[in-house]
Image 1 (cartoon, helix red, strand yellow):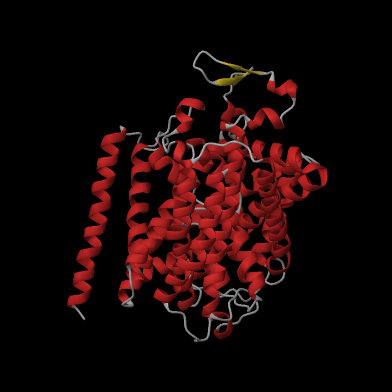
Image 2 (cartoon, one colour; image 1 turned 90 degrees about the horizontal axis):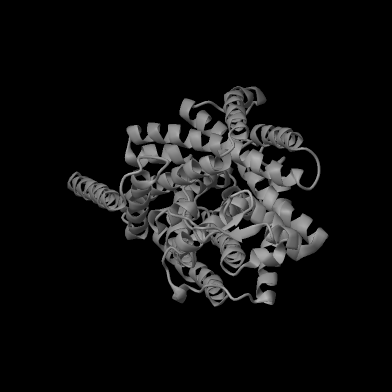
Length: 501
């Protein structure tokens, strides 16, 4: 528990200190924001700051800092370091600088920012990647909440239809009509869940593995998880540490801010809050899997169904290991119902359900905005919004049908979504680096995390069994070479840029 307490304190200190460094480097001023200059009563609308913060928090959160943190802690206490340092020096900086660049460019999306600073080829590639990611996230965040809600009341497919109808409303209607009114209430339920679970953790004071107990892959021996800690941990925990998905969501709030000076609490602050969510659920996962907490929160009948197999791993009578039987959604529902009682568990589950639903709805809205930017189509009329939304909904329904019909749909989609969002993070950090250099600012702020994330996504693509599945050492060497080439390309461009001035 000491590692958890230290990590929470470190996050707060990081926000107080390092966010000011990022703010000073970027240099917000008093120019008119897009929400004022381009007000259209649909996407460009000034909203109260507290609402913007709540919306931004929910848009970037989803189930990412919950499910990702639970699965990331399967690697052991090293997850604490990634969440804390990744959030402060990587993710929050990524969110702040990219959000502020969008603010300076009329609230443009991530793909458009990429085109401005990395060229037209990169822009086209990011349009394709971002659209695919928005569709995957939208479909993914329909089905997962439906599973949880059906466990409380109703049928799974009933909730799928209801959630998708909600997505249509959030995609089509002006941002202040649905998102601006409903999201703050959902954010409060999400924060209640995190605070309640965190307080129970401190009250119980379970004996958990600490950072100083070892930073190796704990899951390899104890849980049968054979993926290498690097780079798998840094892809599994995306939201809560570093996530390129956030750069697709921040432009929505950049179109609603009345002042550039709000960027620090909105962009950097929301990311730190998400890091806190990840810390809580990573600690829950440590308690559940490494401190035998699952025995305390499950019925005696269920506990008796697990025995130690010939490989030394605990297995259910149907042959599944602990992590296969207790997947991330099951851990959430089990902990909430056991620790918080009926009333508390409903509110907590509402927080867990509200986050992915709101993120999924925002993803579909983002997809519409990407198409509008790409084809330069105004979105003032309901007809124009409908024409762009129809293909978005069609693809989303197709992906959802595939996920429902695929028994391993959850894990399959998650791996591609996690890698895709980290790929976008690497690209966005390079965009931020080029911007800062061109504006004669301290570009090291984003250069170092850009280098690290490039190494992560390259190595994961080479070594993962879902992609190329190359041997570990050769893939690590190859990814290091590719990362070095990216750095050299930046240095060559920088010198050429200086020489043309």
